Amino acid sequence: MVEVLANDLPALQVVIPLVSAPLCLILARWPRIVWLLCLAASWTSLAIAIELLDQVLSGGPISYAMGGWAAPWGIEYRIDAVNAYVILIVTGIASVVMPYAHQSVAKEIRGDRVPLFYTLLMLCLTGLLGMTITGDAFNVFVFLEISSLSMYGLISMGRDRRALTSAFQYLVMGTIGGTFILIGIGFLYVLTGTLNMADLAMRLPEVTQLRTLHTGFAFLVVGIGLKLAMFPLHLWLPNAYAYAPSTATAFIAATATKVAVYALLRFVFTVIGPVIAYQDLPFGEIAKVLAVLGLVTGSFVAIFQENVKRMLAYSSVAQIGYILLGIGLATVMGLTASMLHLFNHALIKGALFMAVGCLFYRTRSVRLDDLRGIGRKMPWSFGAFVIAGLSLIGVPLTVGFVSKWYLVQASLEVGQWPLAVLVLGGSLLAIIYIWRVVEIAWFGSPSTRAAEATEAPLGLLIPTWILVLANLYFGTHTGLTVGVANLAARTLAEGLR
Amino acid sequence: MRFLQLYNYEIAIFLAMVGLYIVVSRGNLVKKIAGLSMFQTSVFILYISMGVVQDGTVPILIEGVQNYSNPLPHVLILTAIVVGVATTAVALSLVIRINESYGTVEEDEIHQQDESF
Image 1 (cartoon, each protein chain N blue to C red):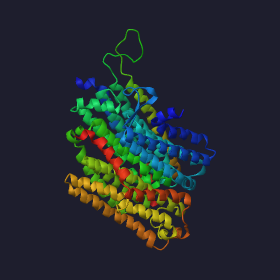
Image 2 (tube, each protein chain N blue to C red):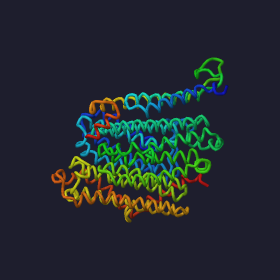
Image 3 (cartoon, helix red, strand yellow):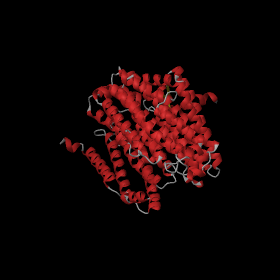
Image 4 (cartoon, rainbow over the protein chains, first blue to last red):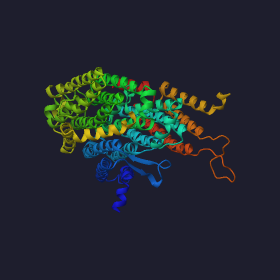
């Protein structure tokens, strides 16, 4: 029995959260059991993810035929260093967010909707894991829509009525993005007659000069770009992050865009191949320009936000710029920096949004005015915010420093020192917007809301601090992350030369 | 005559553009959803057109027929139709709740209310 299950780990990775979603609805009368079920499901997922990564690191890529149908005909789940690493990020964040959810959700969401919230959270996890693990191009679209549809629901559950309009805005843009991806996949299919990624990669080089391929690639990049909030396509993100419930924001901000980046990497490097993307088509230049625009404007706009969650959302747009920059450089070093920043940004943004969630738990507001003087009332919550903020800026000993170090090195390696300057300039802007919050929240005289606030409960503080300490731990013990990120980057870059 | 031979692709592109234009230009949220549905539906036509095999029949078992259309795009599109229905359902339910809390489904009126808020 155990052996049978061990062989089916790739399927279980997706099936466990998928099955627990309807169970949440069936058990809706007992919210506590629903929560325990989700907690168990996400921790099991994390255990499977660790086991899969271990298997990949020791024994090379795993191919799993879904339902026993062999690869080019059936749906293949294919796990190599790249997606094992991304799965670890997603399940890791889910495992930390889930204990945090219990008290935060109880406070922010109306009682009868709590089980629905967990159902959507589990579906969202299913979609994200499925998108990452699958080796079938059409399957990516299906899982993408599962995660997106549940995300619209999660965002709309925010207490503010603007949550509804931002969910609607995201739905419109997300659906256009998803449909663009569908068109792109259709073009690849019509050229090759296959949907299996490995099979596509083998057959596409025969048709490199056809315009259908170039058009399909453009559709894919724009579609995935909408999902990952690439600079001019990021308009849905600030509102969606700002008005969603704290738990949903922490989870979505730390995982959804990362998985979209993974999908982009997969299509560019494995399916289409870097030769077509970077040499026949100007993907590298476009990625670099959009990355730079994103990281400058994102950081700059963040400085002027009055809503802390919105500020962090704009900072996410900027951080996605850093990730995209590494991809645009198209070197092993650049890809390593991007893969590292996927992991590190998940830790940073997860910690920041959870710390803001702690402040919101007591003050019921995330406006800077209302948070005046909160630092001295809630030192642990705000301390978490400050340390994660330092990590966002990229202070040494934190994870933010590690990824920026590699990104600067990658820029210098190809002789593009202006990019290195821009990366450092982005950090300076981050100092400004993080300092602004620190100044008001620590040194301001307490607002009426802050005066009544007391420290957040341990149920929120412990998960938040786990992520904050992870920021420090992985900032000083870089062996594991850099090792895996480098392996993943080399796996992707096989086609580069 | 090549233009006419590819007419279903042209219809698909036309529908997609009309759908996108409605999404962008209309301020009424329900009309936006209608445009979005149209955009998605155009992709269904695109996919089904891909599966056509010249002089092929429908892809079911018939005695003596060797040449039939490719059934795979049809199956893919069944999935995409489900996704489309789900998206429309979620979008409409969001509109209902927006209407409950704002009393309108016009985009500019919603913005006005949020600004004064």
